[in-house]
Image (tube, rainbow, N blue to C red; front, side, top):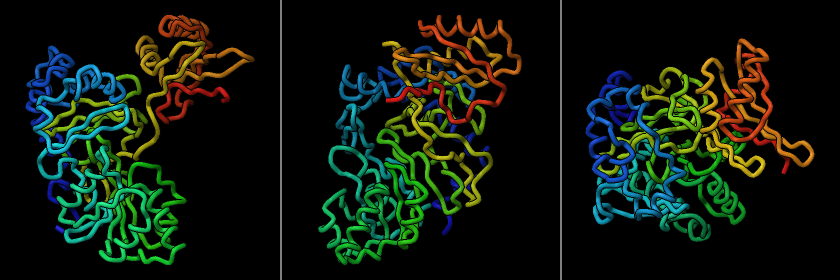
Length: 409
């Protein structure tokens, strides 16, 4: 095939869904062989988890909790069944969070993303992600080699030495942050060095605003974005269709209301939750703290997996009001107690030297009684008093934000 990595990418969506959930019970059993997952999923019958609705009833595991869990039971918090020596490489990310790399080929599932960005077997790739302790460099390195590419393990920085490598090996591809790609191109232009062999790029790890996209394209490089994490590898990636990001194979991606594990309607912004069907290192409903929204239908490139808009901000909107933390989970609890409401947003402002909370709530049936009831619920859940403002259905932005801290710095 020339347009797609393999036939799995273009299969009927229902076929993919059936295959994922047919495999899920075994993955759950493997996950529950680890003591922390056995406790986290206590009482769960893996054989019964064969649909999205059933999966959505399982508790989420928040990535933000991993540093404390890993510290309490090093190195993996009890969520990995195998010993460290059963993995190929062992990494750390800020937190610290400790991440193992499975020993099988393309353990981070990145070859598809590189292929979708135009990389092909035999290409030489300049990989500028860091190889030092964190997994970023190896995620892209092993993915490129799984595709059949040669890799220059450059890492970030040392532009002068990178120019020598580029002029000698003539790489056609670049992987790294979009920021460093611009730095490299600017430095080459200033030094009169030839980096014109680079024609395509797969970028990640930083924002890639439209202005920078246009600048990179004007300089002769076709750049695509990928979304991944050190825990899961490549989660979603752009294709030539440029119509959102296609979710990778072997992953079940959910979008949930921040602070909960409850899936949102298609098109609504929510937090990304991922279940990975890697038998060597499964993740079950890992809540990443990142926001996105699902796109309807399938990509015009022919890939039929779920599509997302890409990274749309952070879901962890915890803020401190009058010395107490207010969390998205608490706003979700208010919503559960008043299911007749639409979206909720807690707006935090200052009046003089005092913090002020205002809960904005969508409703088609505003009344003083409802306003009063909501104020009571808000105080009961947050232990803080606040104002309530009832607004019309659809009045609040669809941006996944449930707490908006609008206090000036």
